[in-house]
Length: 163
Image 1 (cartoon, rainbow, N blue to C red):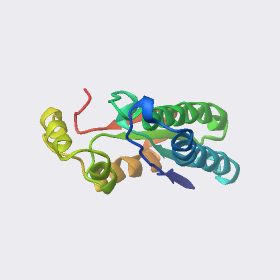
Image 2: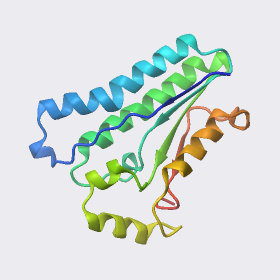
Image 3: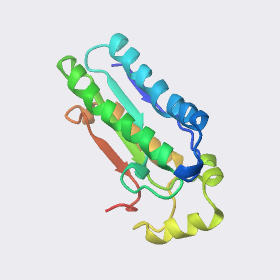
Image 4: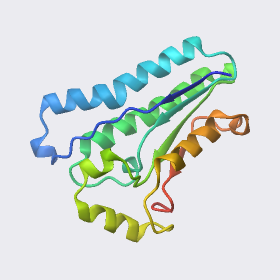
């Protein structure tokens, strides 16, 4: 079985009024264009029964100020996952997304003020930030045989930030 795990992300944190066309083009190129064409290529080369997994974000369900481009680009990716699931399903290729919540990564810390961590931990059911390895475990599940009946889904790996 072949697997594609597409994990590309860039965030521009600006109010909509301050977003430039360059910001838009750069963010959509990273967060949507690259993963979209990776999904396309994977559909061409993966054997029947393969797995395609895209990384999205909780911010498509819980958007916040200043992340319009990030949330919009990842929402478009989620829709592409659903369409690809329909298109590749006849070959038993599953296509899913994982949407991490607050995860202890450089991107999180570089895109959020320090007080954001405490605020998010305070409303997360498990009372802490996620670790990258925990998100990888969810991806690993989707890449394996036990997920063969899941396709076109977006698994929220949030530690209970969104219930």
